[in-house]
Image 1 (tube, helix red, strand yellow):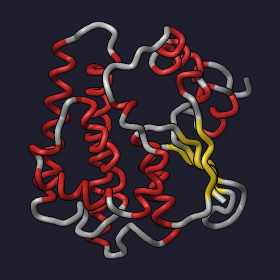
Image 2: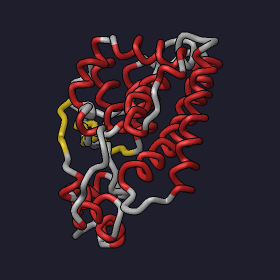
Image 3: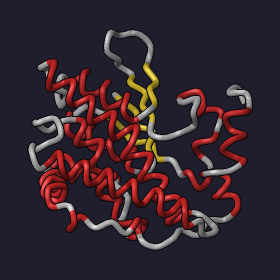
Image 4: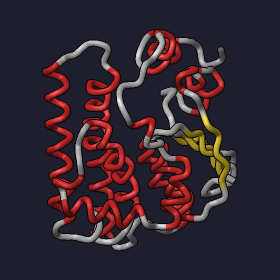
Length: 240
């Protein structure tokens, strides 16, 4: 049994979708980050970075004690290798799969995440930051579209690379980016959206309503997401 410590973000969706695709037994443990549930000493012992998602595999590869694992990209690789699916066996295809997964982890996710922050969460307008990250978000989406003009999926076959990227593309509407300008990415998005496991894993996805407008956070909620409470959680002793 795998525990999925989960929050409704694109990174959380990656793991919930993959667990459904692989049909691995699991249970979801939801967290409310606005309430600071990710900042407790108990969760810090699972992930010292106090970020979600994370998993605990009670029957880990190789046996032994339960395995706690964080970082969504690392989780995707671990689960795909455990199941022997959705990560290519061929060395060259595998290398391309990991290339696009790392592209998502180092580029698409962080840049879109910063665009979301300055468009939706920033308490005062910072035009330079907003434009800088929106431009990079659009550029990366064009890179994705270019790749999908020459291949059905990012690594040639459906893989964890596609699963990693898909939730971020879904959330692009919240930063006023429409897929109509990216026809290849739009085709790919719809193709993945129709998969039964994606629909089932997508029951945990971010709702359309939550992607609309600018969230109104209290000072405490802001601190739990971005401020002193977040810093304090990793500064304190993990023993509490």
